[in-house]
Length: 159
Image (cartoon, rainbow, N blue to C red; front, top):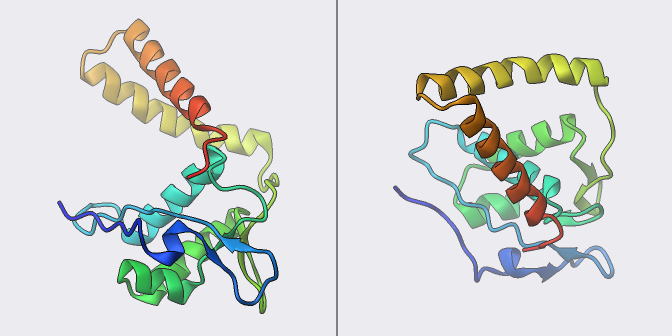
């Protein structure tokens, strides 16, 4: 399984932006698996979303340009553009003309009731899969709480 990661590349270790005084392009350290059944643009979206959720990427952090990230990951720029477009639709990033792509403050894009409606099928799938693997209610609850604790402990650790 091939995983693309470039820890020593300037755009993954932090690089000064040439068009924005004092702005630093953040280290993304994305891990792309071209053999995965998950489309590459979705892998980018999920990893950026995770880094924002765990506060490894914060408000006003600048991401590499579409072209720079595509070159770094050896991808078609349209793939990165599609990922960035989805993140923008979700209200995670915004493109500032002439300045770059930035993480923005979390805003509620959908009502809480709509969010809950979307969460229910995900929970149903999780529970049915877990029960099919003979997990008890207690084991499932423990695994879920462990994962929540893991996400909580990731917060604040910028990479």
